[in-house]
Every structure is written in C-alpha cells, then in structure tokens.
Length: 326
Image 1 (cartoon, rainbow, N blue to C red):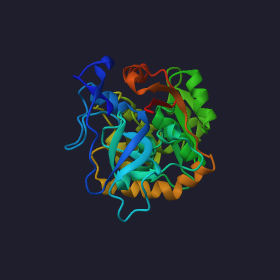
Image 2 (cartoon, helix red, strand yellow; image 1 turned 180 degrees about the horizontal axis):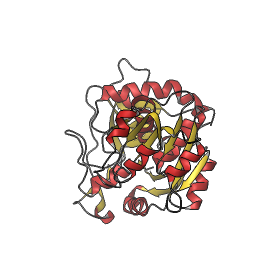
Image 3 (cartoon, helix red, strand yellow; image 1 turned 90 degrees about the vertical axis):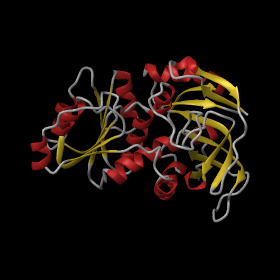
C-alpha cells in the first residue's frame, strides 16, 4: 500500500511517500480501506520528534480516517464488511489501509461524504471528552474556546452552540473571528487586539465563563483563571504557549476552580469506545440533521502530506486540513 512515513524528525519535507505492507487486524480490530484522512496538530508534533506513538502503534502519522471496512473482527458488533465508517486510530492514518479498534469505529453520519466524515473523529472525540466529560459543561453554562478557528475550535463552537450554550471564541485575525461567529460563537475575540479576559467579563456581567477549552496554556492560564466564574473549569488539551505557568492559588481555593487536562492518544480502546458510544447517541443525530457541519479549509492528495503540514504550521487555515487518499 502507499503510505506517508517520517524519514527522520524535522520540517515538513521529511514526510515521504513510501510502500508499506497492508496491516493485519488483530482480535478486536478491523481493517479499513482509507478514502480520506485528517491532518492534526499532533501529527506535526510527531513529525518533529516531540510526540512518539504509543507502544505498538504504527509509526505512520494520522489519527483519523474515513473509509470502508474490508476485513477484521466483527463479532459482537453491528458492523459488517463493506460498511462506510470513520474511525479514531492511534496512528497509521496517512495510508491506503489502516487498522482500528472496533470500539473506535463509527458509521459515516447520514448524508455525509467520506471526506466530510474523516473530519470527525479526532476533534469530536477530543471535544466531547474534555468539554462535556472532564469539564462537565452543563445546561445553562458558558464556554470560551481558545483557538476558535482551528479544527478543534470549530468543532467545540458548533457542538456547544448546537446544545444550547453561550460560546465565545478567540482567534488571531478579524476574518477568523468572523468565521467563529458564523459557526455559532456569540462573540469572537481577536486576541491580538483585544484582551479576552476583559471582553469575557463584559459579556457575562463580570461573572466570568464556566468552562474554558485551552490549547495554549503558558501565560494564558493566569488570565484564564481571572475570567472564570466561581466553580469554573479549565480543560487543557495542548501547550502551544508553553508548558509552565504561575497561578494565583488563592483564587483557585476561594472560588473552587478546577484546572485539568488530558491527552487522548494513549488512552485505552475501552475509554475511547465509551466516548464513541456517547457521540453516536448524542451527536450523530445532530450531524444527520446538518445542525453540525464539516469545515474543510483545504484538501491535499496523500502524496502532498508535506504541503498539508506546512499549511498547518502556518496557522493560515480555518477548520480542517484533509488528505484525499482515493
């Protein structure tokens, strides 16, 4: 099969097209013929040598795909050979075939294309796990999304807004701010020209927001603590702004604040399968009604994965960067 490998840690051009054996599914896994794959920030970190695959995972990058089941262990499932599916994988997505734990495989939502379905797994699993499970965004609560124009950001905005929450989002240009508002954010905040903490306090009558989805960390954290409501929660999913911060622990104690975080890739198939179950129950109906929609910025053929990574690193995109495999 054709695949993209990382010949050595480095810039985007270390991604090279190669030939690899078709993987063989183990017990509890299915083999998917890949039609499309998503490009995500963790893929960039892996390429640079900063995010190693978990033990036993493929060294080929790629965490989400959509395609057709062609083989595997389908006992005790409702899936069958030939089904069109999307899947979250631990690696191997930049290839013509990939294996996936059956718990992490979901049917393509009704009315969605394969390309559109490949935009779903990494972002929706991550957002659901962190915003709704870990940070427990509840009815009537507000959400601030840092990096609202990213793949994660556009997912969080749409999903929270569709479920009835007030959503605010930061982005780095006025065009990206406008895109966040078009997707359902009540207010977009240009973090280069506005102080998100001040804006959030104004929008909430000085109360603050209940939950912040943060992929920046670093010096954002003390500012985020200051614009949380009492009993507020910060869910950290990346540290693009740095891995260290100084917090006012007095505020954390007095106002019962929670600062938490997680990475999804090393978690068990059982853990991810529980997220998949919730998504199918609560989110798939919204997708079938097109209350949630894919936001695709650019589609590259598989062999141009290096160009896709260069675009990702430029931060010049709104939404998803995708690879078309067949």
